[in-house]
Length: 151
Image (cartoon, rainbow, N blue to C red; front, side, top):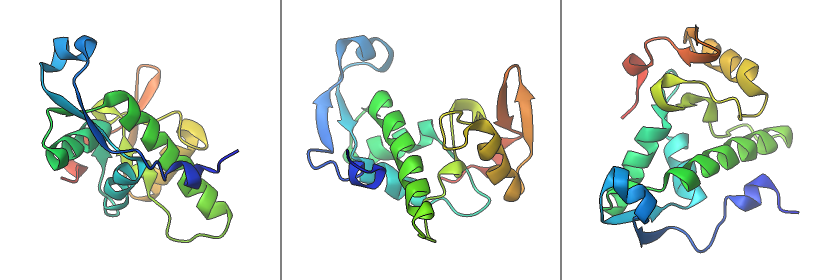
C-alpha cells in the first residue's frame, strides 16, 4: 500500500479537460483543470503563519494558473485531504517542516472534520495561531475568517 506522501506524486496530473455537463450547469462551458496533488500542496505550503485560505481560493488559484474556468472541486478536495495526511505522516517520522494544512478551511471558514485528529485537533491548531473558533449550528468555523485570508 502506498504511503500518503507517495500519493502526492501523481504522474498523470495536472490535466485540462472540458467541464463535464453536470458541472457546466453551474460553471458554464469551457475547460477545467484536474490539478496534481503537488500543486495543491504547493499552495497550502505557501500560507503564512496566522493566515488562512479556503478550498475555494485554492481552486481559484489553480484555475488562474492553468487559464481554465474552474479547478475540479472533487479532486481538489481529495488532494487537500491527502496533503494533510502526508504532512502528519512526515511529522510522525520526524519531519519538522510539514505543510500547515490546518490553515486551509472549507467554504465559509468552516473547519474540516476529515483532517487528522478531526475537528478537535483542527480547532487546537488554529487557536494556537490566534484564531477564535465559533460554533455554527453543529459545525465549527473561524470567527471573522475573511480578515485572515491570504491571497
